Length: 150
Image 1 (cartoon, one colour):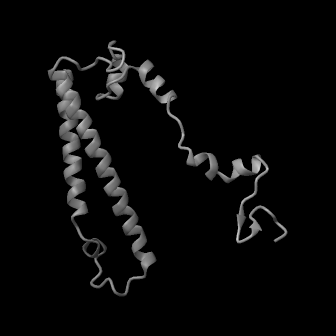
Image 2 (spheres, rainbow, N blue to C red; image 1 turned 90 degrees about the horizontal axis):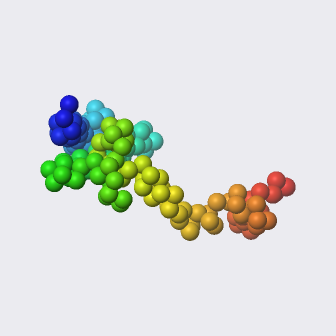
Image 3 (tube, rainbow, N blue to C red; image 1 turned 45 degrees about the vertical axis):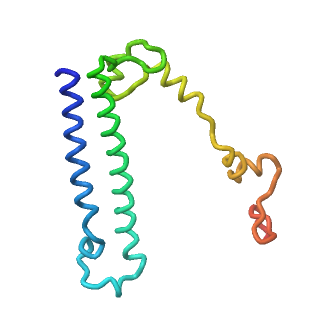
């Protein structure tokens, strides 16, 4: 199958999934739970429904981003730039394009970009295990969190 056809097929598939997800998110919580009144519902009973709706919203956002990536790949194909690494200018490996059809980087450049990722500074101080490794303690209300005597 030609590359452009693969990209178009993927675009159509994503668009159908996005449309279905949007349709399901348009249904109100009241309609989706089949309850006549929300008044008598305990908040915990609705927590699962809320979780599922938030998860669906996140999945929709991911699908829309993937659709944007597919559209970008189609533009690159039409401009004769598809399959060329945006960093080094070399050809992207066919196996990589087969697996990740909209990629813009060859495997070597992608690995280099991954290796350059640095963790946020907040993580240096927020992991309590690292604090205890340095001999520091975590206190809550004036008590040592790890002290078993309290």
